[in-house]
Image 1 (cartoon, rainbow, N blue to C red):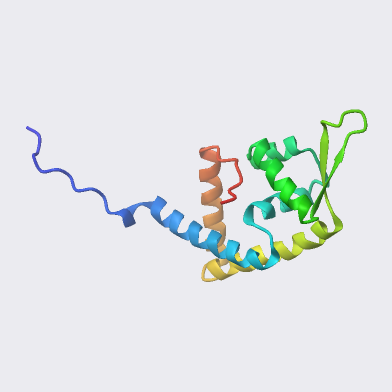
Image 2 (image 1 turned 180 degrees about the vertical axis):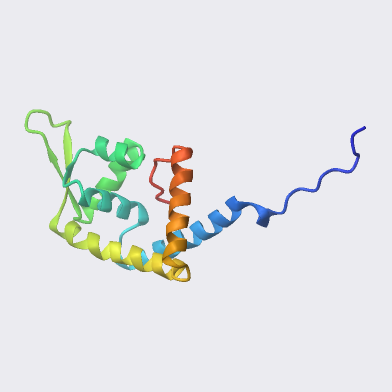
Length: 155
């Protein structure tokens, strides 16, 4: 005979996902707040950082790399072009084919933004030893690989 006493729901704070989201949200919000002074959003930072290693990139390739839609890349690229951090060139024989290029200002800004990201990580994870950081990093990468999480989080 089944028990008539219902099993109480698990406590929110017993879920690993709760703690991952709590830390992730605070790290992300802190980084976004720090970026405000630069005039760049987190999403724009992701595009600039990816472009830094790929000097001439088609928007479709950038969409594949980041996991963002082509529409999202188009909007982000346009904002970065207006900010003079990216430029757009077209193929001579086909104006539909675009290439995005970091401007000199964009190239100069990326290391500064990376330093802000590094500082933000240090503020949140300084209490962990190098061994603990390495372990957390390996665990998170294993979870991402297992669940095929390839999209770059931008929000």
